Amino acid sequence: IDPDGSCGFTAIARGLKANGRFVTPQEIRFALRTEVLSNGGFYNQQAKENEAFGYCKKNHSAKSLAEAAIHSGHTGHWLGEKWGSMEVLAIAKNMGITIELFCFDKAMNRLRSYDLFNYGEVYVGLLFSGYCLGGHFDLLTDCKAL
Image (cartoon, rainbow, N blue to C red; front, side):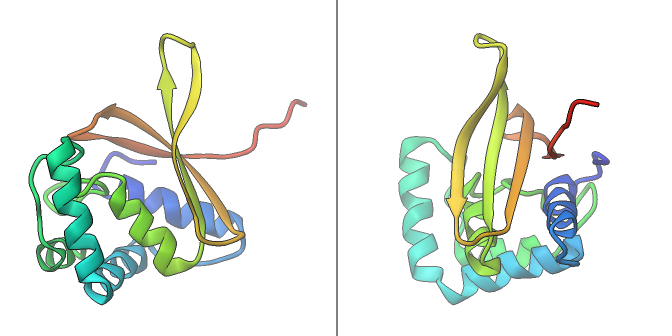
């Protein structure tokens, strides 16, 4: 996945394509926007709690996230920028899919799941690398031995 500021949205779109659902990264941005605007009270409360625990750098309102989410590219909104993995939860919930987030655990020398949002049968696995305030998403696919 290209590191173009839309890697998370692109990775989800490609994962859905592999499952026969054809959506664009921009449509996924709109799904995030729709979900947080439709359930703003829930997400605003969660954002306050996440800020208190240090899971996001600053509490952003549902409205500010919704406005930012539709802007793509290097200077646009990147997935997780404001609310961390809660943004992935919102996409999974709105689209009725399951998204699992992985990172590479150096101590264990393997991939480790760190979040699972189960809202449907269609599954998308994402690998996050980098720091929590800026990183990169790739799509995880099944690898079969030849």
